[in-house]
Structures are given as structure tokens and as C-alpha cells.
Image 1 (tube, rainbow, N blue to C red):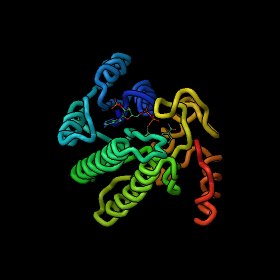
Image 2: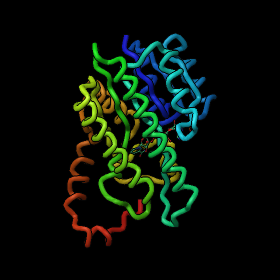
Image 3: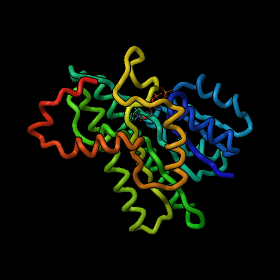
Image 4: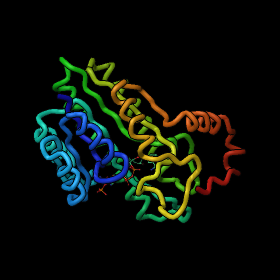
Length: 245
Ligand SMILES: NC(=O)c1ccc[n+]([C@@H]2O[C@H](COP(=O)([O-])OP(=O)(O)OC[C@H]3O[C@@H](n4cnc5c(N)ncnc54)[C@H](OP(=O)(O)O)[C@@H]3O)[C@@H](O)[C@H]2O)c1
């Protein structure tokens, strides 16, 4: 029976993927800050899901993460699905700090802890580290500076961990999952976004990327084309674009 830990599983994509894996018979460890929501998800599959309240920005995050691994008796897959971010053209200090604490500090802590776990255990079978980053890491986005920069950080961090695993002969696959807009509580509820996707559409694609141990998975192909085009735009032109999502 496969075992997966999902950080950021109280809502949105993380919560949906947790229940999908539980339905398949996997052991699933879920974490986030809102314990009441984690409990509700556990109650859907009480024999297969365990939960632990974790704030990835808190000092005790790694200790609690390791306790959750023990609760489900090991880990084959980590999915880091925690995240926050806002449209923030006024560059609010509190939003910037929260984005960095969650998407940079908390992310690095949990990825490091997962890598160390696999380094000590994954010699016989392969470990998997996956994270939902975003297409927002493609370029700096003016109305979302902290978020887009934090997602670029995540891309580079995962690439670095993949290289480290190769150099240290650690049997772990690293998957960077980059969706475009998805209809989750992260987005403002009162508006629609360009090429917005439903969780029903995105979740199976994320799961497939994890199971196939893809290095990078852009979701979906329309977003792969769009971000390839973004990359080709010279800075002098990019600065003029109004990406007022
Ligand atoms: N929705 C999109 O359009 C979109 C597009 C591309 C990428 N993404 C990325 O996808 C990931 C999942 O987001 P989502 O869209 O599914 O939105 P979501 O429903 O808001 O999910 C975010 C999850 O992260 C958890 N979280 C936030 N801060 C945390 C913290 N300090 N410690 C632990 N858990 C924390 C939240 O739980 P608690 O509040 O209970 O802690 C929640 O379970 C994020 O990294 C996001 O950047 C989203």
C-alpha cells in the first residue's frame, strides 16, 4: 500500500488529491493549519487518512511533519500543496511576509525534511518529492511580486534538490507541478480568470505527473504554450504588459 503525505490538504487541490488517493486505498497523511477541516477529510476515509495540524511557518513544523510520517507508518510520496498569495499592487508588507514565510521558508523546511527522510530510507524503493508551484514563476509579475518571486524560488529549489539527489545517490524523484489558474479558494471568488481550470480537471493531471515521476509538469498544454510565449517576450515589452488578473 502506497503512502503519501500532503501538506496543504485542508482545501483546494491538496484536499481533493488526498481523497483521491485515499479512495485508491493509499495511506494518506494530511496537514494544514485548519484542524477542523482536516478532521472532516479524515472522516471520509477514517481507516486510511491521518492528520496533523501543521503551520509550515512555525518552528515546530518539521517535528510535526515527522510525527505525521510516523502516524501513517512511512512515506513514499510527499506532495507540498500549501501556499498563499495575493494580488498586491500596493506591496503590502504583511502579505509579502506571509507569502515568504509559507512559500519560501515553510516550503524549504518541508522539502528539506522530506529529502532527509528519503535519504535515510529510500535505498530500496524510490521516494518522491512533488510540489505544486505555479506558472507564475515564469516571470516577475508586477501585481503579484512576492507570489511570482516565491514560485520562481520553488522552481529553483526543486531543481537543486533533484541535482543534489543525483550527486548524493539518493533514490528520489523530484516533480515540479506548475498549474495555471485553478478554481480554488486561493483565487478571488467573485471573478473569473483567463484559462481558468476546475479542480476536477486539474487533480487527475497532478496525480498522473506524480505517479509518472515527471520532473516538470505544466498544467495544462494551453498554459505550457502561453508560458513559452511569455519567456520570449523581451523585458522592454514585458514591463508594458498589464497582467491585471
Ligand atoms: N489556484 C490557483 O489558481 C493556483 C495556480 C497555480 C498554483 N497554485 C498553487 O497551488 C497550491 C495549492 O493552492 P490552492 O489553489 O489549492 O488553494 P487553497 O485552497 O487556498 O489551498 C492552500 C492550502 O495551503 C494551506 N496553507 C496555507 N498556509 C499554510 C501554512 N502556513 N501552513 C500549512 N498549510 C498552509 C491551506 O490550509 P490552511 O489555511 O488550513 O493552513 C490550504 O490547505 C498553492 O501553492 C498555490 O500557490 C494555485
